[in-house]
Amino acid sequence: MRSIYFDIYEDLRDRIEAGEFSYRKFIPSEAVLVDEYECSHNTLRKALSVLRLHGYVQPIHGKGVMVIWQPDRHARFVLGDIESFKEATERNNIVASTRVRSFSEAVVDSHIAHVTGFPEGEEFYRVERVRIINGSALIYDINHFLKSAVPGLTPAIVERSVYEYLEGELGMRITTSRRTVKVEHVTNDDREVLDLLDYTMVAVVVSQTFNSDGVMFETTFSRHRPDFFTFHNTAVRGY
Image 1 (tube, rainbow, N blue to C red):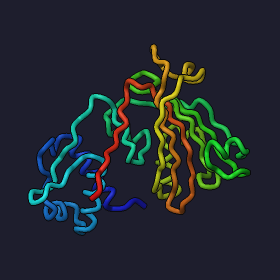
Image 2 (image 1 turned 135 degrees about the vertical axis):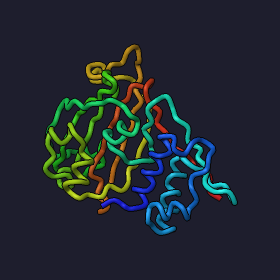
Image 3 (image 1 turned 120 degrees about the horizontal axis):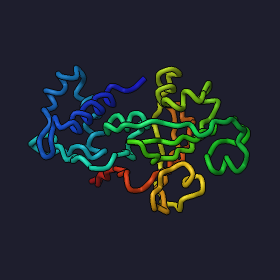
């Protein structure tokens, strides 16, 4: 079950991205938003804190909360958010589809344990998916899902949305994702599945994702053609 503050964060984020609250303008006051969302001041402050951490707003002492987000011509895959590909493309108003390249089950050996962080001897699903955006194959995802935490996975589910299945049908709470971004030379698989044009490098996001029980249920290597995407994050200096 998702937290109320995160639902409020997502709604305010969407309203900012839609232009309802524009750049350098102030969002409604805390009192107004508390009434609108029928929530506590503490819940709203948590939502605003997440907005700030993700680079959407900046509190200005004595004035309110100002919008600092500006639209980007590239699709924005936000490193600070945990969202599915389906959610990200809907947020960016992108026409997209998924092609499942392979779906298999195996047992974690020493190599897979080193690559994924899964315990040896556990069963896992290995899934390869090609993400097609505006008619071009631009992302190649290699997913590993721990079978004990993600039972009943099928090719039809991974073609649609794994997170939708986990949260909607299994009732899982997805809480934390640890990510690394790097640049790598293209592989033969990249050349086979992606529309790479003349690019010889891809951006790779490695994600290890945990549920509310502290179980790392997913390790994913997401390989992106570099010209189309902006991986956005915001750093806040602490005092």
